[in-house]
Length: 223
Ligand SMILES: C[S@@+](CC[C@H](N)C(=O)[O-])C[C@H]1O[C@@H](n2cnc3c(N)ncnc32)[C@H](O)[C@@H]1O
Image (cartoon, rainbow, N blue to C red; front, top):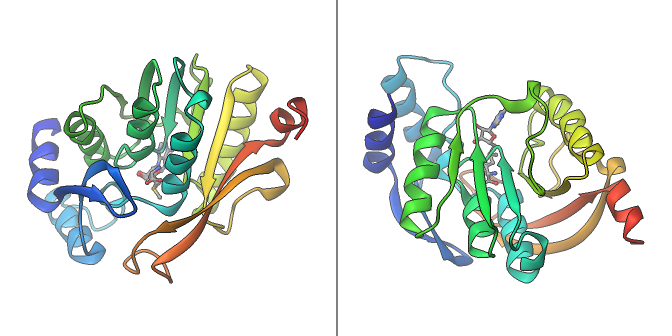
């Protein structure tokens, strides 16, 4: 499946700079529905997940802008990009000077896309293709969570996992454009960016993407 997933990504997405974030090149698609249909045919699964991996999501884009402005947040550190999708945030972390970067996603095509996209950007990203949310958070310095709050069931699992990571002393950075299940009371805003997305995914071409830390971390640094 790994090789055919790579071939599928290459067949259905084209490598190009991310609009508004030209330093990162990704295999991207223009339209979500035809690609989703192709995924359903390829996997013979009408319940197959949306091809999240073929798009740069607004929350991830905000995190990337933050890492460009604040490379010290990840420089030299071990970074884990949860729900990596295309690998967007993992690649941005590597470009910002992270020492070791892992991108994790449950989707087979995302795993292939992360690998292809990291290579296309000349960056090394280790790919984890499994659901890590039932495990202890990994031994890393920073966890990135870009655009994870679009689904109630996922949000219910992500929050305790990120809190457990904080208890282990891991820095957590969340990027989000105001999704419904964002746990705002648990977060403190660090930055806000005007990000370019697509009306294939969102109601508007431009969104406000915010970057947050978990509240206890911000309290510790006096924010
Ligand atoms: C909206 S996309 C965000 C992708 C990327 N972070 C970005 O901002 O462009 C959400 C991603 O979460 C992944 N995902 C969903 N449940 C997951 C889980 N339990 N563990 C890891 N990834 C998951 C999906 O496969 C999808 O690629």
